[in-house]
Image (cartoon, rainbow, N blue to C red):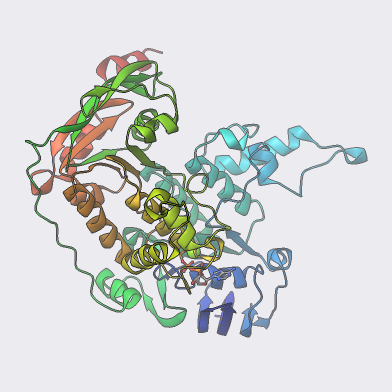
Length: 508
Ligand SMILES: Nc1ncnc2c1ncn2[C@@H]1O[C@H](COP(=O)(O)OP(=O)(O)OP(=O)(O)O)[C@@H](O)[C@H]1O
Ligand SMILES: [Mg+2]
């Protein structure tokens, strides 16, 4: 059987980075081929070469056995190669349908846009994705997860024979992931070859047929997913064994309360939420997507207004109306939407990290102490394994996961008493995850109060001293952390709907 695509001896260099070293990759019709490797290993770069976005420096590429050199995304599309990018590339001010069929809008006579056809065609693709969305919806009003689904619809609109998915599930919840996997099954049955990139190890076993592993830009191996244990794949990725020991949970019941939230309410999204976090404590927030966890964080951080409720810091009632007032009250928030907050991509890694706490680096005269900034930047580059040729590299040249590590470093450095981390390890490779966990633990040990929102249950369970669980805007319970609590107990609370609400909907 001829391969759909075959790549051999692919080389790619960027200034200061040998991104791909003699890499090979092939894709068969009807298979899901996972491409794995740590942040910066070269996954996105290889796929950008396959999809005509970057030119290879050396090497060969074949489609259906014929040598090809796609010199742009259009040329790759003509070869049947489509890509769903790691970074969302939608036009925020356009509607969903305008984005899905951008550049190929159906037209009437005299070139007038055929709105009805545009929306109908998009609705059809949405239906195949089981996505309930009006094609006329403006993209900017949608959550990142739903924007990701629009992006997927856009790729499918080209009816590709080869579909590259670069971390398609990073922002999706379990139900949405299941829908996506159904679509993948359908595409496989139609003979489409799929390249699948993800840092979520559990997904690999579920959908991959084969796995190719890259490390530091080098090709390591291609293995059959069914007969390769995950531990082997991880070891091939990181080149060493990764151990994760759950630490002892400190007794913080005697520490003073750092943050107290009483009866926080906002529309249907947050209903009467009350809890507190003590100094030195890590409070995890579990729940299904849409449970209201991010919404609670955004209200506490002053990013969204509240209808009702009080917030106390160190026992003092604080009137938080904007993120600025929150920061002044000592509250920091690492948002789940990294792209819009937190990074100056045209500035260096060093500047971005130091920006978190300029006061620390400014001398009496206000002149920044570059040596101190360099030292701190290098420490975090080292600890988080940020892959960059130097601390003076501009952030935009870093891989997706490494950019996130820079954002995280910034927040870890910030001098806040209360730190809220929303999905801190999304898109982060497995080796760096455990380092982020220990940095969060260090912060707690210094007496900070930490809130971690995470959709990955093992992560919440691994990190939290206590676990708050939400369902449909309500806090349905707080469970102890550590081995005492099981996934089942969390899931029970995460799906515990308000009987009054559930009843009301059924009678509608
Ligand atoms: N346009 C560019 N200019 C300079 N360096 C780049 C550019 N694109 C990628 N790199 C570098 O090439 C290397 C590989 O990056 P790539 O984006 O392929 O990694 P990745 O495996 O996709 O990682 P992640 O899991 O974080 O997305 C990284 O060191 C990155 O900084
Ligand atoms: Mg990438």
